[in-house]
Image (cartoon, rainbow, N blue to C red; front, side, top):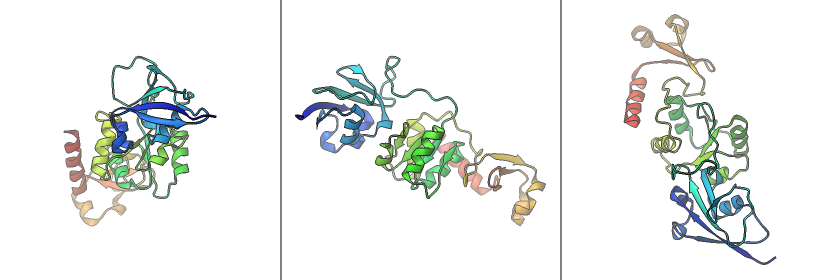
Length: 247
């Protein structure tokens, strides 16, 4: 079969996945057989979970639509435009709270998300297949610095973190998924992601350092790992951090 060509234009933040010479311009893609539009886009370098709208010759199409010769394909990220007609977006609203699964390089980010109250699964021995399975089975958003992980077929929602610094990564996630009004700080265990419950002081006395027994009276305990928390200097530092990002 002879080579065929299609043209792709990537809008907004999707240009982050392209080499500088290809950004904000039409990209020519040569192919044989008839790949899905998704396969062509990922061959160029853009992972499918970051795509919100696909237009082929001006009309919306699905990710798995076959790529037609000489097609003009425009690819839009989430939140690029609030004006899309109903049915254009590839993402359907998900009921319930926003939940995450993070790759092995994002332990600090996992703690920050938990500090804000977001259910965030993380273990330092997760491999890509495990993360993809958890994301699919539990309908979680994948957060990663590995673009290849986002191209996994089982991953439908995900985000590639541009920054390598945890505080900046947190700001990215809050903006990308519009989470600023969904904070429930100090409700999750920073260590294991379990829920925290307020408990009487006498029930956790044996777990407390001597000075903590003397100076503090309000305590919280993780339902899962039994870790005990109180509003000491670490709490004040976290509160200051929350005030900073909320501002």
